[in-house]
Length: 480
Ligand SMILES: Cc1cc2nc3c(=O)[nH]c(=O)nc-3n(C[C@H](O)[C@H](O)[C@H](O)COP(=O)(O)OP(=O)(O)OC[C@H]3O[C@@H](n4cnc5c(N)ncnc54)[C@H](O)[C@@H]3O)c2cc1C
Image 1: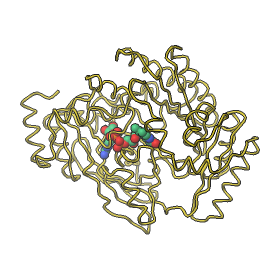
Image 2 (image 1 turned 180 degrees about the horizontal axis):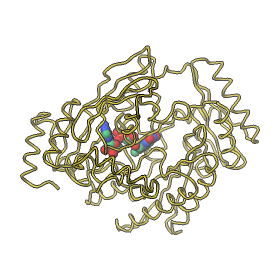
Image 3 (image 1 turned 135 degrees about the vertical axis):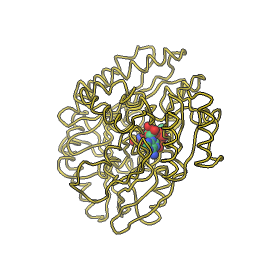
Image 4 (image 1 turned 60 degrees about the horizontal axis):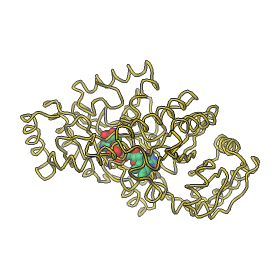
């Protein structure tokens, strides 16, 4: 934590940059930014042992103010951790080394909309839901719909490499981002090129995507927009077994069809969470699809073709109204009473692989998680494949232990054991350790496993860009 003389220089410097009313004292910062949404960060904060220990928090209003704050932090050698909505589930936004929490939410303007090219310049602290609402009023959509839409910011989504429920057609956040305005770890303001494609050297924009605040602070992004669809068509089917469902999904994706929503629930997820949300009994692997677009007849045709592929895999057609209800209630899964609360232990192993490996990844990951939990803890494990790609898919294994050990250290050990088992099994079966939640403190111990020699390259990039190691030190295991 920061020494008293540095602390007073820091506070004075920050007040000069943003104005006293936007500098939050240590005591209040430790309350307000005590934890993101990682189970352990929440549990530790509730036990009075918060892993986030900021010395101060500050809310800048412009890229220039962000740059001045970063230069001040370099002069005083104080860590900075950007904070978007604090909705991350991997522990990335916690200021575990103290220093400054940089709350980005005052930077929430839509600076420009280009209705001809369908692009938009939006600031990093804009909340996803607010952004979408404003665009919808103009008949436009950002099409990035994370379940945390009411908390997550544009900058946080880019930094954590997020994904939304429409990703199968419209892409993950990295597909939406065309260019960035960002502040480097030494305080320079950079604008990356924005054109449909280029060959003017490497793609600097993508270096910042998924960097979780370690390589720069995203002050604004140029993002791709879409027209609001004129028609949405739903299709729901169940399968005799999960393998048939995975094969149907593979055939749909490799045929060139583009469902924005394609979610395959295993029997546990279908019969527990999905059935409850759509108020329909379900007792087999179930696939929920949605097609959308500008031309209603084309949308209908796409849905028919996809359902035809499912029927080739012996699928049973279920009422489309289940899909409509799913759409209406698509976020309920993630909030009480569906979402767990303390004293439960919860978390999601979300991993991604190509079609060659995805079924083995599902089998091995879910098996390893089940084996890692002693029977007395009554593990609930519900798994679905929520995002599909042209050559693979992802596995979203959601675990919950209704009541974990009362002792925080023991509870943390159980949590870590489950994640170690799940992540190592997934990796061994051919997956990458995360699809869209990011790395954070939870998965940092697996970066070496994932990257091997590549970790040295990442660490050298970090060192070159951030010689004083001020931006999120230690995060992503890229620096000491
Ligand atoms: C109920 C619930 C549902 C969720 N559903 C989804 C979902 O559907 N899809 C999904 O992808 N995720 C989901 N998440 C996880 C989370 O919402 C995402 O990771 C989201 O992208 C985080 O955005 P944020 O603004 O809250 O970032 P934060 O949690 O504040 O920060 C995340 C990381 O980004 C860094 N950061 C934040 N802002 C900036 C910036 N401007 N510049 C540089 N670095 C920055 C932080 O330092 C941190 O490393 C869910 C979480 C919850 C609690």
